Image 1 (cartoon, rainbow, N blue to C red):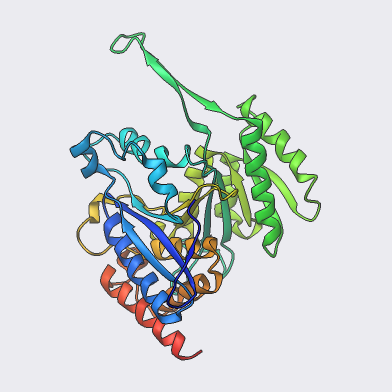
Image 2: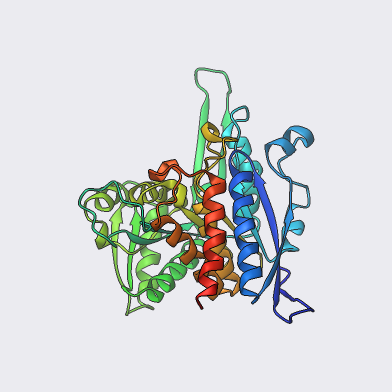
Length: 370
């Protein structure tokens, strides 16, 4: 990780960000977020930031036969963080694009903590009729480096009636222990100090039994954090029927991949869901991305919701140490949503450009009132 430098003209921190818009609506929402962050930097004057475009993605794959440069890790280590858009295209199998790009970064850089905050934004509403204001305010923590997405397994006797395919989930003590410790620390930092550990140890009797055992062991170091354990299938019911009983949630790579999309939908739209791929040791630069994916059906139409990427950019700024700027950006986004300037997925009529312009204008307005 390069570490921030200093702007010689102002003496304020200067950050270098790798921008990987990639596929689908990725370029549209990443461009929107860059505009908003640059407006924020210029308006506040407390930091400077530069974005370097990296053309990895499906177009790069079709030209070069691979999704990323051969020296992908060295390239990214030259930046303070990465802002990512989306990966995937209709004419390339999903497992090729995912393993070629995202998973070629997350695992090798040991971005082992995937963090996804979820809440209902002002001006939006949950589809849950019984969900009150503030009932959905969750922090989802996903193990991001092993588990069901470890990449172990294979196929043999292809094309034969007796063809065999295996997909092996890998759970290591060190991998489970570090994500549990991260989750307990995250829960401790939140007002409710409440953690739910998602599992499926009733049927997965090896890896997830280890998962449960490590959770209980780590919990002993956090006596101030109340925690419980929930089977993943029962967890879906709890999220719908009793959302306010939850706060911080930790689960495996696969379980939280699924539950985080459910969580975003319950909060109002997957278009507002951000994520952070973190290396808590800070040895490698972390990566920030919206959850929504490529969204081929609206690609190029200019109607993509940029809020998830704004929120991801805010999380990036907070991780870099610019917590006041991050909160300022989120306040501007929330005010715009509350004013009813929303894209279609949130019940509005605004397009990507109109939402972005409104956020930039709100940044200026808020600063003028300071």
